Length: 61
Image 1: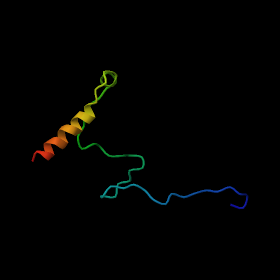
Image 2 (image 1 turned 45 degrees about the horizontal axis):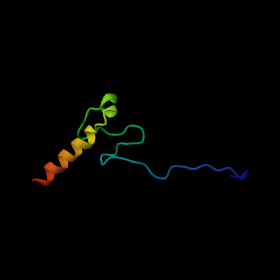
Image 3 (image 1 turned 90 degrees about the horizontal axis):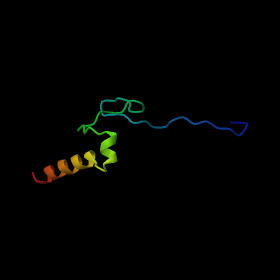
Image 4 (image 1 turned 60 degrees about the vertical axis):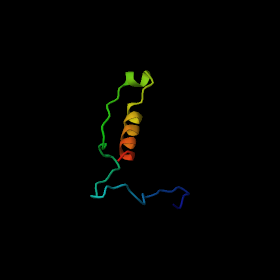
């Protein structure tokens, strides 16, 4: 701008293959793994455990 300030316009966006805008909505997970605060305090990582389980299952096919 003339006074030295500036503005910008977004030049890209995140969309699903169907065209849904992911900016403020996001998507639901393929595999839902419930997790709560106590699980985290105990040092468990159920999401990581489930991910490893699914990867090993795919590798054994």
